[in-house]
Image: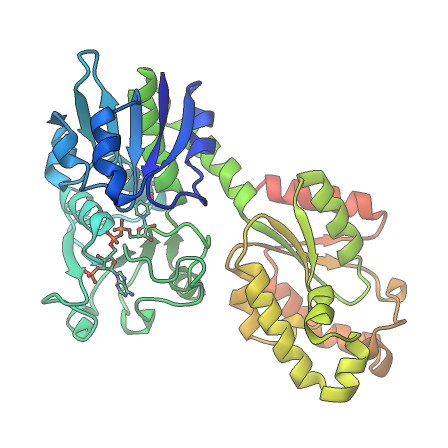
Length: 407
Ligand code: NAP
């Protein structure tokens, strides 16, 4: 009995991990080039498979029968070999997106919902939303409703992003600006890497509901796992698997005054969570090829902050890291979204009299008290959590893990 995921490029897939949490079966990545698809499907050397980009439609002719959802969506993401050897095609993205809407708390009946993108995920989202009684408008680059006439739909209550715009590694881009939608209640983005796309960060800044596609990914896998294992799996299990995957994918980002313990605590956190530890100051030194005090002396503070922003942007879009940032990174507004896009930001607080100043040019030049007073509201604004580093770094690291566990 073997199962797996059929697709063209699968190196970043989380499916094996998700399926191992749901079922006790063997699950492999089955990377197949388009020219080999026919041979792969005719051999059908599997008990069941999931199907991803670009084959969700291409596998249709090889299925002997389809579920009503697969027939309706015109796409298959789950194939199960029947006892007589025939292939049954189903689409669990419908269930996955339904669950995503349900956990968002958004109520879509009789509301105008814009679905951005008319590809496979867009069709699934539109179908679920129509079934829930929403007035669905599909925004498509070349369609009747497109990005040039969005002003006809400023009364939208919900926006769903079913395009790849904003997905890793093209973080920081958004298909639309939310500024023209005064009645907007929330945004659902099917992307899950980064955890907060530019579109979701815009929604968060407006205090709107903002949900990414990770729950959908896990929920659709749960329904597939039920067909693969022949066993019903409780919906609560979706939340457990989702929480554990979310914790694993997201970065832990440490901010705080120079010398507050970010590197020591970060190293301990990395060890405790089996993550890589990254110190952005060290990356800056590697990038500019000289110590930071010398770089500041030669090129000035502004240039330093510019390089720091570049380093933060490159580092924070990766996943599963512990990242110690420079003490002054909060002084640049641009760093706010960059730091928060893929993880939780933790402010490490330490009494000023315990902060060292040696080798820290800004701490030596300015009164630490003045610097702290200026930065305190910024640390507070950037942080998801704050912890006090008053006893030992080990205790501070444990406090951070407790805060993240309770998330
Ligand atoms: P797809 O079939 O390739 O369709 C994507 C659609 O996005 C295209 O048809 C296009 O629609 C639009 N688009 C593409 N590039 C664009 C650009 N540069 N600017 C504006 N629009 C663009 O892909 P898909 O399978 O629907 O997936 C779409 C997204 O959903 C991906 O990010 C995927 O990872 C995500 N997804 C997530 C889950 C989950 O479980 N969370 C499941 C499925 C998909 P128009 O031609 O109409 O403009």
